[in-house]
Image (tube, rainbow, N blue to C red; front, side, top):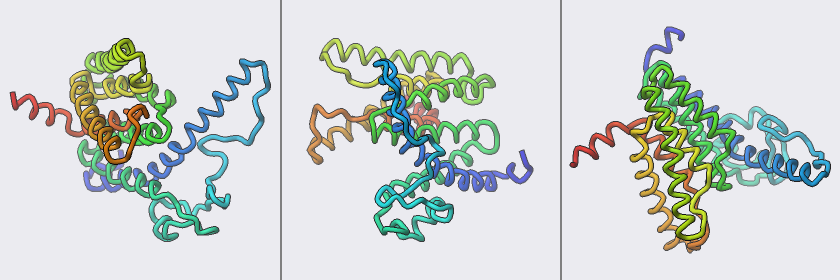
Length: 283
């Protein structure tokens, strides 16, 4: 590691800048990954029917170039500077003046600020690198699930294995706690899913939720799972009740659970031990 990055302030500053540009990339992932998955499903369905998949232009995280959804104007490099371009353009397309979604600069800003805090919290070293990867993954998963009610295996499964890899050196918890955390994380929600289905005949959550909690357990150990489930359930219940009461959200309309798991995972990464100790101290 370069000498200047050993200074906590310099390290946090670099993490802020990196988080800003990663946040811009996360916007691409959140928008494109579900559509890439949908294209893949259509191609697989066509193959099963014995048909040729529809030929179309390449579509992945790099191709085609970003463009305005209203007029098709290709976004140039100068228009793609995180947050700055949004402010300079006053939140509108340079070509057609259509409004640009506020979510883009918000995700970039949150990614930058949260990255700075993770870097400051852990200090220069492997724990901070892993913490940033964990944070960025949680942001992407939360917003993908919010938009599509999907938690892609392309993120959750590598995240799970990465958590175990980082804990080979006990970066966050001993490897044994990480393995047990992955197992219990998956099985706990899997058990709730089947119990709910047996009682009600309905599916209460998706398999992506099991994998996400397993990934959190692989990173942070089995000890944080009760806290993660409790925090995500409380916030999810409060939001769900509010939507039903104030936004006329139908009781039978599913509410994604992934964003609350992701938020609880970030809280557990940064303050899990303190929250758990304070909670247990009450008893």
